Length: 556
Image 1 (tube, rainbow, N blue to C red):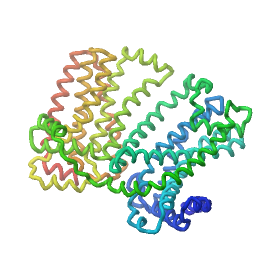
Image 2: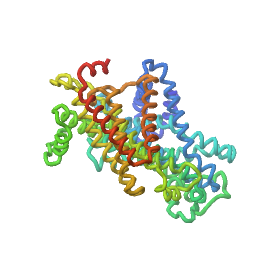
Image 3: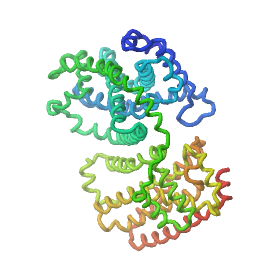
């Protein structure tokens, strides 16, 4: 497959030569990168038999891309005006492609591992930059074609073979524009931020993209099916003609001239000329500054020691002194507080969950035939606030799940070298840090929303839900996470263990929430609150008294 892609991207060798690239060097570098891709282990899990599963992993990724393509083909079948439908479709496709490129391909485009081999060779900037662009282009084609396949098939069924032949032309123009926008965005980030902050910014783009995909998959079908969306009138949206996706949609007049709108002929010419200009500008303007930025980014993984700011950084130490009594618990609190902010893996896995809960709550509210406005009007008369508060347990569970995982897990030797009588003190300190830093602020925002909508009568429900969710988190830590913070290598669990964890994570909060929901008497809620508080104290005390025998048992 990679040999075929290599031949395809090297077909316009004359064009690459006219741009200043050395063809032999370009072919060698792109071929080597594709060869390394074949030997790279799959990121989905850690299979032992990589050779056997690599092809299946590629097919799986293509299948996921195809499923994503089904998410935004709804406008093609719902909106009657073909140009308007294609405008919405191309807008969604371009937005998805832009975020996909800027998050998943930054490591490919700005990979500095090969600089020790290439930079002292007689290779010019344009050849090096073009080799990376073509490598990204091949990666993108593997995702781009399956993602466009559902729309391609639907257009062919609805409008015939001419539309099916026409369909790839605007999509490839869209691909060139996305590449230009992404590279321009990279350069803008490097212009505004230091090279050491580049991966930090990309990490936050990944978080935003994860939230967008979750919200898009749950809420967009509901929005598209609304009558307002189906009856879009471009005559009222004057700004639409300035969007590249509208230019691409204007190409539809090649297939159906009778559907031409105002200025569509001129805009259809822009749909061809602008992508070609984007491809030329990417090579002409971005390539000269590419090498300087590439060398600068090499320092991104180097830990830069900054002067300590005692006035701003000592407050979490004072907080550690307040909520912890033993020195081990204080150390665990401080280590977890700092490392949870520094670890990109932790931020990438935990931060999106803060948006998942309200998005999924809104999705559950929109189930049925009632409009969203009527649903919010009748919200205060329902008891759905209990469901919302117990859904917050997902945030705490996700944070605790990645509390013990780290890429620098070998640094955990310091725990075993320290004179700790009870390692549970460090663990309970880490638990308190995650609880105070992430869960309490999030739950406080939810509690304020609940009190604003349901009034002061919901105060007892808020306190009981907070206690029960904390009890659930403490039990999870007591049973399954008797390990030091950020001390374990992430590894693929067997299917049975993973299924059991997911089942428990869904079942226990659901049972607690159902029991809370069925409790209507205020005095009965107080009784349950007292019992949950006593049980919570016992579980936390048992977890804090974890000894070395329990730790070794957990490790084995």
